Image (tube, rainbow, N blue to C red; front, side, top):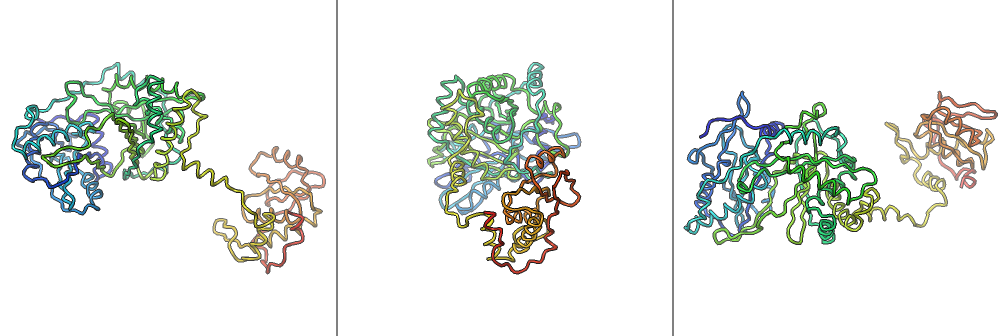
Length: 590
Protein backbone atom coordinates (compact mmCIF):
# COMPACT_ATOMS: atom_id res chain seq x y z
CA UNK A 1 0.00 0.00 0.00
CA UNK A 2 1.28 3.46 -0.82
CA UNK A 3 1.42 6.08 1.88
CA UNK A 4 -1.52 8.44 2.39
CA UNK A 5 -1.85 11.50 0.18
CA UNK A 6 -4.24 14.42 0.49
CA UNK A 7 -7.21 14.36 -1.86
CA UNK A 8 -7.29 16.91 -4.66
CA UNK A 9 -9.71 19.82 -4.68
CA UNK A 10 -12.04 18.14 -7.15
CA UNK A 11 -11.93 14.87 -5.17
CA UNK A 12 -12.90 16.81 -2.05
CA UNK A 13 -15.81 18.34 -3.99
CA UNK A 14 -17.21 14.86 -4.68
CA UNK A 15 -16.72 13.87 -1.05
CA UNK A 16 -18.58 16.97 0.14
CA UNK A 17 -21.48 16.11 -2.17
CA UNK A 18 -21.63 12.65 -0.57
CA UNK A 19 -21.84 14.32 2.83
CA UNK A 20 -24.58 16.67 1.63
CA UNK A 21 -26.90 13.75 0.91
CA UNK A 22 -25.88 11.10 3.45
CA UNK A 23 -26.97 7.55 2.77
CA UNK A 24 -26.96 8.06 -1.00
CA UNK A 25 -24.70 7.03 -3.84
CA UNK A 26 -25.03 10.29 -5.74
CA UNK A 27 -21.47 9.93 -7.10
CA UNK A 28 -21.67 6.26 -8.10
CA UNK A 29 -21.30 5.03 -11.68
CA UNK A 30 -22.01 1.63 -13.20
CA UNK A 31 -20.84 -0.92 -15.72
CA UNK A 32 -23.46 -3.53 -16.55
CA UNK A 33 -23.87 -6.42 -19.00
CA UNK A 34 -27.12 -8.23 -19.77
CA UNK A 35 -26.16 -11.84 -20.51
CA UNK A 36 -28.10 -14.51 -22.38
CA UNK A 37 -27.15 -17.33 -20.07
CA UNK A 38 -25.52 -18.12 -16.73
CA UNK A 39 -22.13 -16.77 -15.70
CA UNK A 40 -19.68 -18.78 -13.65
CA UNK A 41 -18.95 -17.68 -10.06
CA UNK A 42 -15.28 -18.64 -10.07
CA UNK A 43 -14.75 -17.12 -13.50
CA UNK A 44 -16.26 -13.83 -12.36
CA UNK A 45 -14.20 -13.74 -9.16
CA UNK A 46 -11.00 -14.45 -11.07
CA UNK A 47 -11.86 -11.76 -13.62
CA UNK A 48 -12.42 -9.24 -10.86
CA UNK A 49 -9.09 -10.16 -9.22
CA UNK A 50 -7.25 -9.61 -12.51
CA UNK A 51 -8.95 -6.25 -13.09
CA UNK A 52 -7.97 -5.14 -9.60
CA UNK A 53 -4.40 -6.24 -10.13
CA UNK A 54 -4.18 -4.34 -13.41
CA UNK A 55 -5.80 -1.04 -12.32
CA UNK A 56 -4.35 0.83 -9.37
CA UNK A 57 -7.26 3.26 -9.53
CA UNK A 58 -9.70 0.45 -8.71
CA UNK A 59 -7.58 -0.33 -5.65
CA UNK A 60 -7.58 3.29 -4.48
CA UNK A 61 -9.43 3.89 -1.20
CA UNK A 62 -10.18 7.04 0.77
CA UNK A 63 -10.36 7.79 4.48
CA UNK A 64 -12.27 10.57 6.13
CA UNK A 65 -9.85 11.79 8.82
CA UNK A 66 -9.53 14.85 11.08
CA UNK A 67 -6.81 16.00 8.68
CA UNK A 68 -9.21 15.82 5.75
CA UNK A 69 -9.83 13.27 3.02
CA UNK A 70 -6.79 11.05 2.45
CA UNK A 71 -6.11 8.76 -0.50
CA UNK A 72 -4.35 5.36 -0.34
CA UNK A 73 -3.56 2.84 -3.06
CA UNK A 74 -3.79 -0.77 -1.87
CA UNK A 75 -1.59 -3.50 -3.27
CA UNK A 76 -3.15 -6.28 -5.41
CA UNK A 77 -3.01 -8.72 -2.45
CA UNK A 78 -4.48 -6.20 0.01
CA UNK A 79 -7.92 -5.92 -1.59
CA UNK A 80 -10.74 -8.29 -2.41
CA UNK A 81 -14.18 -7.56 -3.79
CA UNK A 82 -16.80 -10.20 -3.06
CA UNK A 83 -19.36 -11.11 -5.70
CA UNK A 84 -22.86 -10.25 -4.46
CA UNK A 85 -25.50 -12.78 -5.50
CA UNK A 86 -29.14 -11.84 -6.22
CA UNK A 87 -32.07 -13.92 -7.45
CA UNK A 88 -34.58 -11.52 -9.03
CA UNK A 89 -37.58 -11.36 -11.33
CA UNK A 90 -36.93 -9.68 -14.65
CA UNK A 91 -39.76 -7.20 -13.96
CA UNK A 92 -37.96 -5.96 -10.80
CA UNK A 93 -34.51 -5.80 -12.38
CA UNK A 94 -34.26 -2.11 -13.26
CA UNK A 95 -35.40 -0.93 -9.84
CA UNK A 96 -33.02 -3.32 -8.06
CA UNK A 97 -30.04 -2.38 -10.26
CA UNK A 98 -30.67 1.32 -9.64
CA UNK A 99 -30.81 0.70 -5.89
CA UNK A 100 -27.64 -1.40 -6.05
CA UNK A 101 -25.67 1.30 -7.85
CA UNK A 102 -27.18 4.03 -5.67
CA UNK A 103 -26.05 2.43 -2.42
CA UNK A 104 -23.32 4.58 -0.78
CA UNK A 105 -19.69 3.67 -0.24
CA UNK A 106 -17.96 4.39 3.05
CA UNK A 107 -14.87 6.58 3.14
CA UNK A 108 -13.19 4.32 5.72
CA UNK A 109 -10.55 2.61 3.59
CA UNK A 110 -13.01 0.11 2.09
CA UNK A 111 -13.00 -0.61 -1.65
CA UNK A 112 -14.98 1.84 -3.78
CA UNK A 113 -16.07 -0.99 -6.07
CA UNK A 114 -18.78 -3.59 -5.68
CA UNK A 115 -19.84 -6.37 -8.06
CA UNK A 116 -23.21 -8.05 -8.25
CA UNK A 117 -24.55 -10.94 -10.29
CA UNK A 118 -28.33 -10.72 -10.72
CA UNK A 119 -29.85 -14.04 -11.74
CA UNK A 120 -33.14 -13.90 -13.65
CA UNK A 121 -35.10 -16.62 -15.46
CA UNK A 122 -33.91 -15.07 -18.75
CA UNK A 123 -30.22 -14.89 -17.91
CA UNK A 124 -27.73 -13.08 -15.70
CA UNK A 125 -26.97 -9.38 -15.37
CA UNK A 126 -23.50 -8.44 -14.16
CA UNK A 127 -23.31 -5.01 -12.54
CA UNK A 128 -20.24 -3.21 -11.21
CA UNK A 129 -20.77 -0.08 -9.12
CA UNK A 130 -17.77 2.25 -8.81
CA UNK A 131 -17.43 5.57 -7.00
CA UNK A 132 -16.76 8.56 -9.24
CA UNK A 133 -13.54 9.21 -7.25
CA UNK A 134 -12.03 6.25 -9.11
CA UNK A 135 -14.04 6.30 -12.32
CA UNK A 136 -15.66 8.35 -15.08
CA UNK A 137 -17.87 7.72 -18.11
CA UNK A 138 -14.91 7.09 -20.45
CA UNK A 139 -13.58 4.49 -18.01
CA UNK A 140 -16.71 2.38 -18.45
CA UNK A 141 -15.92 1.61 -22.11
CA UNK A 142 -12.39 0.46 -21.26
CA UNK A 143 -13.44 -1.56 -18.23
CA UNK A 144 -16.25 -3.28 -20.14
CA UNK A 145 -13.92 -4.33 -22.95
CA UNK A 146 -11.26 -5.60 -20.54
CA UNK A 147 -13.82 -7.44 -18.40
CA UNK A 148 -15.13 -9.24 -21.49
CA UNK A 149 -11.63 -10.18 -22.69
CA UNK A 150 -10.51 -11.41 -19.25
CA UNK A 151 -13.69 -13.37 -18.49
CA UNK A 152 -13.52 -15.03 -21.91
CA UNK A 153 -9.88 -16.01 -21.38
CA UNK A 154 -10.60 -17.37 -17.89
CA UNK A 155 -13.71 -19.31 -18.93
CA UNK A 156 -11.96 -20.80 -21.99
CA UNK A 157 -8.66 -21.39 -20.12
CA UNK A 158 -6.68 -19.34 -22.63
CA UNK A 159 -4.19 -16.53 -22.27
CA UNK A 160 -5.69 -13.04 -22.33
CA UNK A 161 -4.19 -10.36 -24.55
CA UNK A 162 -0.66 -9.65 -23.33
CA UNK A 163 -1.34 -6.03 -22.43
CA UNK A 164 -4.05 -7.07 -19.94
CA UNK A 165 -1.44 -8.86 -17.86
CA UNK A 166 0.45 -5.59 -17.41
CA UNK A 167 -0.33 -2.64 -15.14
CA UNK A 168 -2.78 -0.29 -16.81
CA UNK A 169 -1.59 3.03 -18.24
CA UNK A 170 -1.71 5.91 -15.78
CA UNK A 171 -3.02 9.37 -16.49
CA UNK A 172 -0.96 12.01 -14.71
CA UNK A 173 -2.94 15.24 -14.53
CA UNK A 174 -0.95 18.43 -14.95
CA UNK A 175 -1.34 21.34 -12.54
CA UNK A 176 -3.34 24.28 -13.90
CA UNK A 177 -1.15 26.84 -15.62
CA UNK A 178 -1.41 30.50 -14.78
CA UNK A 179 -2.33 31.14 -18.41
CA UNK A 180 -5.30 28.79 -18.19
CA UNK A 181 -6.43 30.13 -14.83
CA UNK A 182 -6.38 33.64 -16.28
CA UNK A 183 -8.36 32.47 -19.32
CA UNK A 184 -11.16 31.02 -17.21
CA UNK A 185 -11.30 33.97 -14.82
CA UNK A 186 -11.56 36.35 -17.77
CA UNK A 187 -14.08 34.11 -19.49
CA UNK A 188 -16.40 34.10 -16.48
CA UNK A 189 -15.88 37.72 -15.45
CA UNK A 190 -19.20 39.48 -14.91
CA UNK A 191 -21.30 36.35 -15.23
CA UNK A 192 -24.37 36.26 -12.98
CA UNK A 193 -25.42 32.62 -12.37
CA UNK A 194 -28.68 33.67 -10.70
CA UNK A 195 -30.27 34.06 -14.15
CA UNK A 196 -29.96 30.41 -15.17
CA UNK A 197 -33.30 29.22 -13.75
CA UNK A 198 -35.76 27.83 -16.30
CA UNK A 199 -39.37 28.98 -16.27
CA UNK A 200 -40.51 25.35 -16.00
CA UNK A 201 -38.42 24.74 -12.87
CA UNK A 202 -39.96 24.55 -9.43
CA UNK A 203 -38.48 26.38 -6.43
CA UNK A 204 -35.22 25.10 -5.00
CA UNK A 205 -35.25 23.23 -1.70
CA UNK A 206 -33.06 23.98 1.30
CA UNK A 207 -32.30 20.34 2.07
CA UNK A 208 -31.65 18.61 -1.25
CA UNK A 209 -32.40 14.97 -1.96
CA UNK A 210 -30.74 15.00 -5.42
CA UNK A 211 -33.31 12.39 -6.47
CA UNK A 212 -32.94 11.90 -10.20
CA UNK A 213 -34.88 10.51 -13.12
CA UNK A 214 -34.24 10.22 -16.84
CA UNK A 215 -36.01 10.49 -20.17
CA UNK A 216 -34.43 9.01 -23.27
CA UNK A 217 -35.15 9.74 -26.91
CA UNK A 218 -33.69 9.08 -30.32
CA UNK A 219 -33.78 12.29 -32.32
CA UNK A 220 -35.80 12.20 -35.50
CA UNK A 221 -34.20 11.49 -38.86
CA UNK A 222 -34.95 15.10 -39.82
CA UNK A 223 -33.09 16.41 -36.75
CA UNK A 224 -30.17 14.06 -37.40
CA UNK A 225 -29.94 15.22 -41.01
CA UNK A 226 -30.16 18.87 -39.90
CA UNK A 227 -27.24 18.46 -37.48
CA UNK A 228 -25.08 16.82 -40.13
CA UNK A 229 -25.99 19.50 -42.69
CA UNK A 230 -25.28 22.31 -40.21
CA UNK A 231 -21.89 20.80 -39.36
CA UNK A 232 -20.95 20.86 -43.05
CA UNK A 233 -22.48 24.25 -43.80
CA UNK A 234 -21.07 26.06 -40.76
CA UNK A 235 -17.80 24.10 -40.67
CA UNK A 236 -18.18 23.14 -37.05
CA UNK A 237 -17.95 19.79 -35.23
CA UNK A 238 -21.21 18.04 -34.52
CA UNK A 239 -20.60 18.52 -30.79
CA UNK A 240 -20.47 22.31 -31.26
CA UNK A 241 -23.75 22.35 -33.23
CA UNK A 242 -25.49 20.38 -30.49
CA UNK A 243 -23.92 22.44 -27.69
CA UNK A 244 -25.03 25.71 -29.29
CA UNK A 245 -28.55 24.34 -29.83
CA UNK A 246 -28.73 23.10 -26.22
CA UNK A 247 -27.64 26.52 -24.91
CA UNK A 248 -30.29 28.14 -27.12
CA UNK A 249 -32.90 25.69 -25.83
CA UNK A 250 -32.04 26.62 -22.23
CA UNK A 251 -32.10 30.33 -23.10
CA UNK A 252 -35.53 30.06 -24.68
CA UNK A 253 -36.76 28.24 -21.56
CA UNK A 254 -35.80 31.11 -19.27
CA UNK A 255 -32.03 30.81 -18.74
CA UNK A 256 -31.45 34.24 -20.25
CA UNK A 257 -28.99 35.49 -22.84
CA UNK A 258 -25.85 34.69 -20.87
CA UNK A 259 -25.76 30.92 -20.53
CA UNK A 260 -23.10 28.82 -18.81
CA UNK A 261 -23.29 25.06 -19.30
CA UNK A 262 -21.03 22.45 -17.73
CA UNK A 263 -19.26 20.14 -20.19
CA UNK A 264 -17.02 17.22 -19.13
CA UNK A 265 -13.62 17.07 -20.82
CA UNK A 266 -11.13 14.22 -20.61
CA UNK A 267 -7.63 14.95 -19.32
CA UNK A 268 -6.15 11.83 -20.92
CA UNK A 269 -3.32 12.02 -23.42
CA UNK A 270 -2.72 9.71 -26.36
CA UNK A 271 -0.51 7.52 -24.14
CA UNK A 272 -3.11 7.34 -21.36
CA UNK A 273 -6.22 7.19 -23.53
CA UNK A 274 -7.24 3.87 -21.95
CA UNK A 275 -6.54 4.87 -18.36
CA UNK A 276 -9.33 4.05 -15.93
CA UNK A 277 -10.02 6.66 -13.26
CA UNK A 278 -11.48 10.06 -12.50
CA UNK A 279 -9.74 11.94 -15.28
CA UNK A 280 -12.20 14.59 -16.35
CA UNK A 281 -12.81 18.23 -15.57
CA UNK A 282 -16.25 19.73 -15.99
CA UNK A 283 -15.69 22.98 -17.85
CA UNK A 284 -17.99 26.03 -17.56
CA UNK A 285 -18.76 26.91 -21.18
CA UNK A 286 -20.20 30.43 -21.48
CA UNK A 287 -22.23 31.45 -24.52
CA UNK A 288 -23.84 34.87 -24.93
CA UNK A 289 -26.97 35.06 -27.10
CA UNK A 290 -27.51 38.75 -27.95
CA UNK A 291 -30.69 40.05 -29.63
CA UNK A 292 -30.61 39.63 -33.39
CA UNK A 293 -27.93 36.94 -33.45
CA UNK A 294 -28.32 34.21 -36.05
CA UNK A 295 -27.62 30.56 -35.34
CA UNK A 296 -24.76 30.65 -37.83
CA UNK A 297 -23.15 33.45 -35.79
CA UNK A 298 -23.94 31.63 -32.54
CA UNK A 299 -22.20 28.50 -33.78
CA UNK A 300 -19.14 30.56 -34.68
CA UNK A 301 -19.03 31.89 -31.13
CA UNK A 302 -19.69 28.43 -29.66
CA UNK A 303 -16.90 26.91 -31.72
CA UNK A 304 -14.42 29.39 -30.26
CA UNK A 305 -15.66 28.74 -26.71
CA UNK A 306 -15.55 24.98 -27.22
CA UNK A 307 -12.05 24.85 -28.67
CA UNK A 308 -10.57 27.31 -26.17
CA UNK A 309 -12.03 25.29 -23.30
CA UNK A 310 -10.25 22.18 -24.56
CA UNK A 311 -6.94 24.05 -24.67
CA UNK A 312 -7.42 25.16 -21.06
CA UNK A 313 -9.13 22.01 -19.78
CA UNK A 314 -6.61 21.31 -17.00
CA UNK A 315 -8.39 23.82 -14.72
CA UNK A 316 -11.09 22.15 -12.60
CA UNK A 317 -14.17 24.27 -12.01
CA UNK A 318 -13.52 23.96 -8.27
CA UNK A 319 -10.50 26.25 -8.76
CA UNK A 320 -12.82 29.00 -10.01
CA UNK A 321 -15.38 28.93 -7.21
CA UNK A 322 -13.88 31.94 -5.45
CA UNK A 323 -15.27 34.19 -8.22
CA UNK A 324 -18.80 33.25 -7.24
CA UNK A 325 -20.70 33.10 -4.02
CA UNK A 326 -23.68 30.76 -3.81
CA UNK A 327 -26.89 32.02 -2.27
CA UNK A 328 -27.02 31.74 1.51
CA UNK A 329 -27.71 28.15 2.50
CA UNK A 330 -27.48 26.92 -1.10
CA UNK A 331 -25.79 23.61 -1.86
CA UNK A 332 -25.42 24.29 -5.57
CA UNK A 333 -22.38 24.58 -7.75
CA UNK A 334 -22.49 28.37 -8.09
CA UNK A 335 -21.29 28.43 -11.72
CA UNK A 336 -23.76 26.23 -13.64
CA UNK A 337 -26.76 23.98 -13.10
CA UNK A 338 -27.14 22.36 -16.53
CA UNK A 339 -24.76 19.90 -18.21
CA UNK A 340 -24.02 19.02 -21.82
CA UNK A 341 -22.23 15.73 -22.41
CA UNK A 342 -21.38 14.61 -25.94
CA UNK A 343 -19.97 11.16 -26.68
CA UNK A 344 -19.18 10.31 -30.32
CA UNK A 345 -19.48 6.58 -29.59
CA UNK A 346 -20.13 4.61 -26.41
CA UNK A 347 -18.31 1.57 -27.81
CA UNK A 348 -19.76 -1.80 -28.67
CA UNK A 349 -23.35 -2.49 -27.76
CA UNK A 350 -22.96 -6.28 -27.63
CA UNK A 351 -20.15 -8.75 -26.87
CA UNK A 352 -19.25 -12.41 -26.92
CA UNK A 353 -18.67 -13.09 -23.22
CA UNK A 354 -17.10 -16.53 -23.01
CA UNK A 355 -19.50 -17.91 -25.62
CA UNK A 356 -22.52 -16.05 -24.22
CA UNK A 357 -24.12 -13.07 -25.91
CA UNK A 358 -23.95 -10.00 -23.66
CA UNK A 359 -25.33 -6.52 -24.22
CA UNK A 360 -24.22 -3.34 -22.51
CA UNK A 361 -26.90 -2.04 -20.16
CA UNK A 362 -27.25 1.56 -18.95
CA UNK A 363 -27.85 1.73 -15.20
CA UNK A 364 -28.36 5.06 -13.44
CA UNK A 365 -27.80 5.61 -9.74
CA UNK A 366 -31.18 7.25 -9.09
CA UNK A 367 -29.69 10.70 -8.43
CA UNK A 368 -28.87 13.87 -10.34
CA UNK A 369 -26.20 16.37 -9.31
CA UNK A 370 -27.50 18.94 -11.80
CA UNK A 371 -30.94 20.25 -12.66
CA UNK A 372 -30.66 18.86 -16.19
CA UNK A 373 -28.08 16.99 -18.22
CA UNK A 374 -28.33 16.19 -21.91
CA UNK A 375 -26.10 13.18 -22.56
CA UNK A 376 -25.89 12.90 -26.36
CA UNK A 377 -24.53 9.74 -27.96
CA UNK A 378 -23.71 9.97 -31.66
CA UNK A 379 -23.49 6.84 -33.77
CA UNK A 380 -23.64 6.20 -37.49
CA UNK A 381 -27.13 7.24 -38.53
CA UNK A 382 -28.50 8.17 -35.09
CA UNK A 383 -28.36 10.68 -32.24
CA UNK A 384 -29.61 9.45 -28.88
CA UNK A 385 -30.24 11.79 -25.95
CA UNK A 386 -30.42 10.71 -22.33
CA UNK A 387 -31.89 13.56 -20.31
CA UNK A 388 -31.15 13.13 -16.59
CA UNK A 389 -32.86 15.61 -14.27
CA UNK A 390 -33.30 16.54 -10.62
CA UNK A 391 -36.89 15.75 -9.70
CA UNK A 392 -37.14 18.38 -6.96
CA UNK A 393 -37.09 21.16 -9.57
CA UNK A 394 -38.05 19.55 -12.91
CA UNK A 395 -40.85 17.17 -13.79
CA UNK A 396 -40.84 14.34 -16.30
CA UNK A 397 -43.48 16.02 -18.47
CA UNK A 398 -41.43 19.21 -18.79
CA UNK A 399 -38.22 17.33 -19.61
CA UNK A 400 -40.06 15.20 -22.17
CA UNK A 401 -41.40 18.40 -23.73
CA UNK A 402 -37.92 19.96 -23.78
CA UNK A 403 -36.53 16.93 -25.60
CA UNK A 404 -39.28 17.21 -28.21
CA UNK A 405 -38.60 20.94 -28.60
CA UNK A 406 -34.87 20.24 -28.95
CA UNK A 407 -35.67 17.94 -31.85
CA UNK A 408 -37.98 20.49 -33.48
CA UNK A 409 -35.46 23.30 -32.89
CA UNK A 410 -32.68 21.38 -34.63
CA UNK A 411 -34.92 20.82 -37.67
CA UNK A 412 -35.79 24.53 -37.80
CA UNK A 413 -32.16 25.58 -37.37
CA UNK A 414 -31.19 23.35 -40.25
CA UNK A 415 -33.59 25.28 -42.48
CA UNK A 416 -33.13 28.82 -41.11
CA UNK A 417 -29.62 29.10 -39.68
CA UNK A 418 -29.18 32.57 -41.17
CA UNK A 419 -32.21 34.10 -39.40
CA UNK A 420 -32.25 35.71 -35.93
CA UNK A 421 -32.79 32.95 -33.39
CA UNK A 422 -35.32 35.06 -31.45
CA UNK A 423 -37.69 34.87 -34.42
CA UNK A 424 -37.52 31.08 -34.72
CA UNK A 425 -40.41 28.99 -33.35
CA UNK A 426 -39.80 26.64 -30.44
CA UNK A 427 -42.81 24.39 -30.82
CA UNK A 428 -42.85 20.61 -30.85
CA UNK A 429 -45.84 18.82 -32.40
CA UNK A 430 -47.44 18.41 -28.96
CA UNK A 431 -47.12 22.17 -28.37
CA UNK A 432 -48.77 22.92 -31.70
CA UNK A 433 -51.59 20.50 -30.90
CA UNK A 434 -52.17 22.27 -27.58
CA UNK A 435 -52.22 25.66 -29.30
CA UNK A 436 -54.67 24.38 -31.93
CA UNK A 437 -56.94 23.02 -29.19
CA UNK A 438 -56.85 26.33 -27.32
CA UNK A 439 -57.70 28.21 -30.51
CA UNK A 440 -60.53 25.86 -31.50
CA UNK A 441 -63.15 28.13 -29.96
CA UNK A 442 -65.71 28.01 -32.75
CA UNK A 443 -68.71 26.23 -31.27
CA UNK A 444 -72.45 26.95 -30.91
CA UNK A 445 -73.18 29.39 -28.06
CA UNK A 446 -75.75 28.07 -25.60
CA UNK A 447 -76.63 31.59 -24.40
CA UNK A 448 -77.01 34.88 -26.29
CA UNK A 449 -74.62 36.65 -23.88
CA UNK A 450 -72.42 36.16 -20.82
CA UNK A 451 -75.05 37.88 -18.67
CA UNK A 452 -77.80 35.57 -19.91
CA UNK A 453 -75.57 32.53 -19.26
CA UNK A 454 -74.98 33.68 -15.68
CA UNK A 455 -78.70 34.29 -15.20
CA UNK A 456 -79.42 30.74 -16.36
CA UNK A 457 -76.81 29.39 -13.96
CA UNK A 458 -78.31 31.41 -11.09
CA UNK A 459 -81.74 30.01 -11.83
CA UNK A 460 -80.47 26.42 -12.13
CA UNK A 461 -78.16 26.31 -9.09
CA UNK A 462 -78.65 29.36 -6.85
CA UNK A 463 -76.84 27.88 -3.81
CA UNK A 464 -73.80 26.62 -5.74
CA UNK A 465 -70.51 28.37 -5.01
CA UNK A 466 -69.82 31.04 -7.62
CA UNK A 467 -66.75 32.74 -6.12
CA UNK A 468 -64.16 31.83 -3.49
CA UNK A 469 -62.41 34.81 -1.94
CA UNK A 470 -59.99 33.63 0.73
CA UNK A 471 -62.12 31.88 3.31
CA UNK A 472 -65.36 33.20 1.82
CA UNK A 473 -67.56 31.03 -0.40
CA UNK A 474 -70.17 33.15 -2.19
CA UNK A 475 -73.16 31.58 -3.94
CA UNK A 476 -74.66 32.48 -7.29
CA UNK A 477 -77.80 33.74 -5.54
CA UNK A 478 -75.75 36.11 -3.36
CA UNK A 479 -73.87 37.49 -6.35
CA UNK A 480 -77.10 37.97 -8.28
CA UNK A 481 -78.82 39.70 -5.34
CA UNK A 482 -75.86 42.10 -5.05
CA UNK A 483 -76.03 42.70 -8.81
CA UNK A 484 -79.78 43.45 -8.62
CA UNK A 485 -79.23 45.98 -5.79
CA UNK A 486 -76.45 47.58 -7.81
CA UNK A 487 -78.77 47.82 -10.82
CA UNK A 488 -81.39 49.57 -8.70
CA UNK A 489 -78.84 52.04 -7.31
CA UNK A 490 -77.51 52.82 -10.78
CA UNK A 491 -81.00 53.37 -12.17
CA UNK A 492 -81.73 55.72 -9.24
CA UNK A 493 -78.56 57.62 -10.15
CA UNK A 494 -79.82 58.06 -13.69
CA UNK A 495 -77.75 55.35 -15.39
CA UNK A 496 -79.42 53.65 -18.31
CA UNK A 497 -78.62 52.04 -21.65
CA UNK A 498 -75.53 53.58 -23.19
CA UNK A 499 -74.16 54.89 -19.90
CA UNK A 500 -70.63 54.32 -18.58
CA UNK A 501 -69.90 53.25 -15.00
CA UNK A 502 -66.35 53.30 -13.67
CA UNK A 503 -65.42 50.47 -11.27
CA UNK A 504 -62.64 51.51 -8.90
CA UNK A 505 -62.15 48.60 -6.50
CA UNK A 506 -60.25 45.43 -5.65
CA UNK A 507 -61.08 42.15 -7.30
CA UNK A 508 -63.57 40.06 -5.38
CA UNK A 509 -67.26 39.15 -5.11
CA UNK A 510 -68.28 42.78 -4.60
CA UNK A 511 -66.60 43.88 -7.81
CA UNK A 512 -68.27 41.00 -9.67
CA UNK A 513 -71.66 42.12 -8.33
CA UNK A 514 -70.90 45.65 -9.58
CA UNK A 515 -69.99 44.35 -13.06
CA UNK A 516 -73.21 42.32 -13.37
CA UNK A 517 -75.31 45.16 -11.90
CA UNK A 518 -73.88 47.57 -14.48
CA UNK A 519 -74.84 45.19 -17.27
CA UNK A 520 -78.31 44.73 -15.78
CA UNK A 521 -78.72 48.51 -15.89
CA UNK A 522 -77.90 48.39 -19.59
CA UNK A 523 -74.62 50.26 -19.16
CA UNK A 524 -70.97 49.53 -19.92
CA UNK A 525 -68.28 49.41 -17.25
CA UNK A 526 -64.76 50.85 -17.20
CA UNK A 527 -62.30 48.93 -14.96
CA UNK A 528 -59.96 51.32 -13.14
CA UNK A 529 -57.11 49.95 -11.02
CA UNK A 530 -56.91 51.80 -7.67
CA UNK A 531 -53.17 51.04 -7.60
CA UNK A 532 -52.56 53.22 -10.67
CA UNK A 533 -51.14 56.72 -10.21
CA UNK A 534 -53.80 59.26 -9.22
CA UNK A 535 -53.27 61.37 -12.35
CA UNK A 536 -53.84 58.33 -14.54
CA UNK A 537 -57.13 57.64 -12.73
CA UNK A 538 -58.18 61.28 -13.26
CA UNK A 539 -57.44 60.96 -16.98
CA UNK A 540 -59.32 57.66 -17.35
CA UNK A 541 -62.44 58.97 -15.62
CA UNK A 542 -62.48 62.25 -17.55
CA UNK A 543 -61.73 60.57 -20.88
CA UNK A 544 -64.51 57.99 -20.46
CA UNK A 545 -67.17 60.44 -19.39
CA UNK A 546 -68.25 58.11 -16.58
CA UNK A 547 -71.05 59.78 -14.66
CA UNK A 548 -71.03 57.20 -11.85
CA UNK A 549 -68.05 55.67 -10.06
CA UNK A 550 -68.43 52.57 -7.89
CA UNK A 551 -65.42 52.74 -5.54
CA UNK A 552 -64.30 50.85 -2.45
CA UNK A 553 -64.84 52.82 0.76
CA UNK A 554 -61.80 54.96 1.53
CA UNK A 555 -60.61 55.05 -2.07
CA UNK A 556 -60.08 58.66 -3.22
CA UNK A 557 -62.24 59.49 -6.24
CA UNK A 558 -61.47 62.57 -8.35
CA UNK A 559 -64.31 65.04 -8.20
CA UNK A 560 -66.09 66.27 -11.31
CA UNK A 561 -69.35 68.16 -11.93
CA UNK A 562 -72.31 65.78 -11.78
CA UNK A 563 -70.19 62.73 -10.92
CA UNK A 564 -71.89 60.33 -8.49
CA UNK A 565 -69.87 58.03 -6.23
CA UNK A 566 -71.39 54.74 -5.03
CA UNK A 567 -69.91 51.92 -2.97
CA UNK A 568 -70.05 48.24 -4.00
CA UNK A 569 -72.83 46.23 -2.41
CA UNK A 570 -71.35 44.08 0.33
CA UNK A 571 -72.26 40.51 -0.48
CA UNK A 572 -72.52 39.69 3.22
CA UNK A 573 -75.29 42.32 3.59
CA UNK A 574 -77.62 40.98 0.87
CA UNK A 575 -80.47 38.55 1.36
CA UNK A 576 -80.23 35.95 -1.39
CA UNK A 577 -83.96 35.75 -1.92
CA UNK A 578 -85.34 33.10 -4.30
CA UNK A 579 -84.33 33.96 -7.84
CA UNK A 580 -87.17 34.94 -10.10
CA UNK A 581 -87.21 35.77 -13.81
CA UNK A 582 -84.21 37.69 -15.17
CA UNK A 583 -84.15 41.35 -14.17
CA UNK A 584 -85.71 43.85 -16.57
CA UNK A 585 -82.34 45.19 -17.62
CA UNK A 586 -81.11 41.83 -18.94
CA UNK A 587 -82.25 42.40 -22.48
CA UNK A 588 -80.87 45.92 -22.52
CA UNK A 589 -77.56 44.66 -21.13
CA UNK A 590 -77.24 42.20 -24.00
